[in-house]
Image (tube, rainbow, N blue to C red):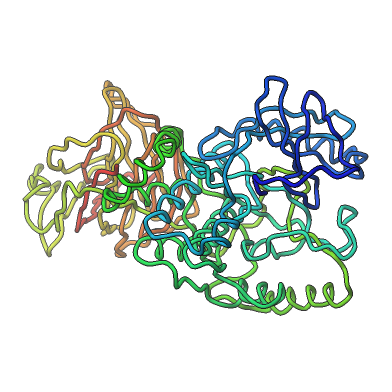
Length: 550
């Protein structure tokens, strides 16, 4: 949508509700967007649905619920929802008017975005997606036309005017292809009804930033069919990007949804310490973005999308590619219009998922300031001591910290004193040496509570203990995570914005909201596996690292 309107047409209404229409800003498969003036004189953007959709009772019901969700999206680098009337003869939605060109118009006129401005654009769009996702909404139609370059901060608009990828849809006009194929994730080309998560928006983010940096989409081709083929089978072109942005965009364009970072992880990575100089320039030029970023990072992070069954696995391309392209070729050859979208409304929420993926989700440990790094070969940071005639100990041997206990229950080795508040990450390599033993890492504490992670052979457990009596209880349990005795695991715990994410070797096992106000803790030890009472119990550790996260 451009903010430079065209004159109203004879068939256009002059008033909608309390709003006077001024000009046309754009049109699509679902409706028309107008510049309008509110009763108080404020300029707004008003979106009204097509008349045929207004007669669809199911559409009205969905529109009503989607407007309710849209109102929950905070205006962090997004156009604020101001008003709506789903019961009007033609339902409409009123949003903030953003006075600035679209990214598409700006690149068409001036060429690719400069390196000095590209980092700020990436932050702004990722911040908008984080706010949208934290409201439980999937955009579904992120593209350069839906990114407006406002003076204080880029603004993302049109949170997903969605439609089913179906040549026979009653809402599709013959000969019309409504969609933004260049910015669609590969899972969007699956069977009708296939689940789409927030990861599809992250893929679109990567496409938008690549377009901004080089002037062409990363999967550009001479025809829509060629674009489909490249997205499913080819590699992206990222010639206009380098350094951190190249890395993040490449990750965002991973063909497997669960291997992409979340929008919140993109924001955190873009604000990492190594970008201080760039951030200073960005926030000086766009002060509103600083406020938006601070507000987004102060809200709880949305959980990583559930695992889906993507169209492809591993390298791009499979039998699914052949089937999908064949179906699309038939549709195009037959002259059928189709809407390259999924869903049926302006907004959508994550779909229910019934089948897990064979590929695990990724755990991205943000960069930060390293506070402790210890190979755990000598008693430099973690204490060594023995009791009970050397039958229970924390001992350094064979290049590792060995922990042993003959009784069931917990045993721990105290680490160095930490002054670590806010967000932080702890990583350590652990190994179960004796069957029936569990690795146990205490990683966070407050004046009242203490959190630890138990890693056993057949279960992972998140434990909270009362600092007073010390009573423990299990708050989360992941029973599908096997841990072989004798095998090294790189354990990872990331505490950020009141949520802990746990995993190993960059694989996410799960997350849990623990709240704010916790300090970092670094005690390594063991516990007995559930229902195992007879020792000995033995584990070992190596290569510990603790970092603070900005």
